[in-house]
Image (cartoon, rainbow over all chains, first blue to last red; front, side):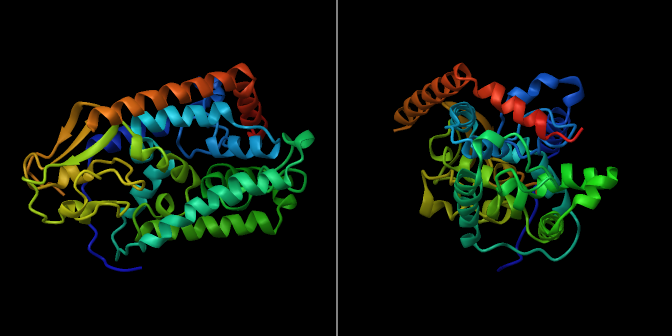
Length: 301
Length: 42
């Protein structure tokens, strides 16, 4: 970990959208039909309040039953081509949690860029390969919930996912004595991982998104061809590096060196850089050929 | 260049839509919902 020059460009609008997302993705009781939908946000479908199906959980179930996930990849692909990773920045409940924890006042650190690669490893190994090897198609609906281990495929969900632990495992363990008795080392190791991730989120912004979210890795594949992207005007940019310092995923580069390559795979399109930019018109966000946001020169970080 | 990117994005969006519809036609959406509901501990 290196450097502590991290700033926050607080956006009231984004916070409101995130809170709406939190409600919308946890509204099962008023939208039970939502389980048919797979949207690119990390919100465990084992949580009773969850409105939609988790894309990662669905992909590993397809892998475990040796089926190609046409529907899931198609849905994520449409969202990715249209919006890139904007869902991560604006709607993901777990992203919101990370933003909130990062507001705790303490010394901040940045993860090294090499950490970004871990999520791709997790995607291939724990979401696709391990369930495909481990799965028993005839039993695929049975088992790898929090504590009912042993017959379902091991996967990212059953071994790592802190969102699942927070939203499903912990409440179910608190609620049910039989589940507590059935808990194994894997249950407690997941809780340990959750605590570790939560602690890291306080010190390093969007650390889980950057290093360990397989869904972010999947969506990152669509970022280069996303219709929603950032653009820098090299004539107006003064290379003050403000955008680099406020970037939550540490993906902004020195604009002069990267002109025309604004959207890296790590960009969650939170637009904090656009808000923080002190040069009027130097940085803008575009949806296709339509400009949706432009730096006002206030630099209100 | 910008227009080429937009056209590529539109074509990919069409491709992904086709993929999703093909999946729905083969019962993927029901499979997803079934799993999501079966894992829900409530």
